[in-house]
Image 1 (cartoon, rainbow, N blue to C red):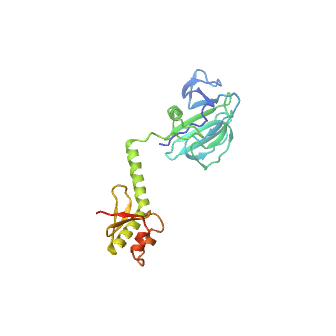
Image 2: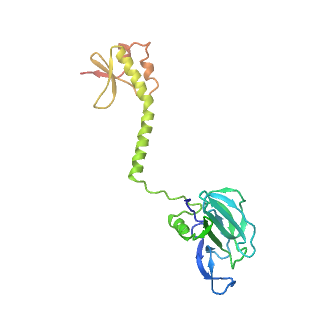
Image 3: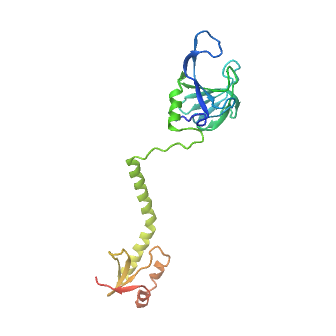
Length: 249
């Protein structure tokens, strides 16, 4: 089911009328009547709040209803759940437009049957009106307000292990060109009657020739293979040009 974003910015609104039976504020009926949504009013009197899409979906702009919803819009999500917002002062989207949760779509107003500026929000599922309160309260508690980054969940041990595996894979891929160059260098040195080794004490690599070992430059440097190209002989002149020390195998 689609995740709901609260339709108004955090701290700008107050809950004024719940879903369910209540006394009709317009006095249209005696006793109680059913209120099919929740009402949210601006904390600053007279200020029409920017209204945002509560879900990602497709917009419908119905006809103006003078005795009821006034200017209103519907947003249908990918699961077919329909959200309606009534009593708008202005609508900034059109029928058929795709919107994302949190996109600004209208301005709160008092059009239609209303006693003051507020937003009346309804939720419909499978053609039946349902209480939007749990979904809106959940969005509040989770901090899903328009313009607010969605809080990221704390990573689980499984997430951490998966990330570590991805990093190790990336590291292996980054080291592959270096490993391939070193392999080519090893084959070249062995082919010329010498060999290379890695010193266990400091991890450096050395070419061993006779009783001498000579330090190999940084294997990632561009001149490594140039130093040991096939047409060059690994002779005294080459080895003497590199730092060396007596070698005891």
